[in-house]
Image 1 (tube, helix red, strand yellow):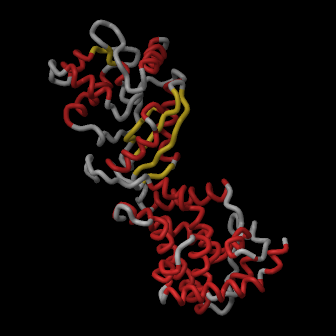
Image 2 (cartoon, chains in turn orange, yellow):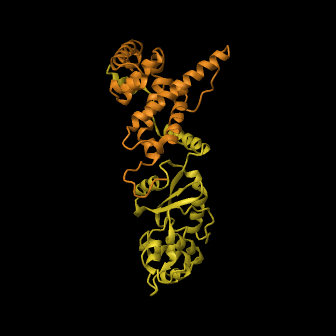
Length: 167
Length: 200
């Protein structure tokens, strides 16, 4: 329990969810697509809630959440690969609430064609607005490598998502 | 195509999506024992009340005049920042408060968490339920009941800082001359509560 007179105190976690929830969901959607995005969001915010009291004052909360979401996305990909390796057939996952609704633009089909790390780089830079240096700290590699990965990914998306643009 | 516009094609995030994810987080937090403080608001004849509960019990009832945002910030500081809007934990309290304002209930029997009150103030609060529904007691009488007959002013400040107004009935404490005295929810609310109870 914090002492009554501690100067800096953290806002209620509810405020963190309200302020950053939508951006983190957009990141999860761009990185993982319609089926896994909401699971990743939920795991991210549960992990964040758990660690929140230990977060240092004046931390960049958005970057902190994106870092957690990044790890959760990697965990999820690893779990999916293990599952696929363990069974011969691709498991049919039941459509969840909200499943593919709103995804008619074809954006996911275009994003899915990119390597995971490229999707992450693009999402953190263009959805969250992180500078490439900060993106590199999360995805690994250099600032230049992150900038190049994003440029390459965007160039591909310009071709593969041209249909969506016309709508 | 502007790169940022690309992501305008992601599905919109509406109330339904936010509500679904929020509920999922609340359920998972509850299951993991991470929901340190749950809160909701309730509309009553004395205005919107904020209700907050720990796993132990009701920890805070706040009038709108106390500024609910500020009250939540203080709960984050004094109890835990793991705070979520999670009405389910407060269903029982909300029902009892509704029954109270409908004159179908005269005592509250939900578990209380008195951790926001300390020392003599806590002693005072623990004696307030002895003042029965529809009755009043003077600050001096409460001071006497709490074992410090001379601590009349301290009783006043204990009532003014009651973290659980309405449920812990500080509104039943009035001045010795019969005038109503002050109240954390405003004198008007105190009048309303006393009138409600005396009409039963």
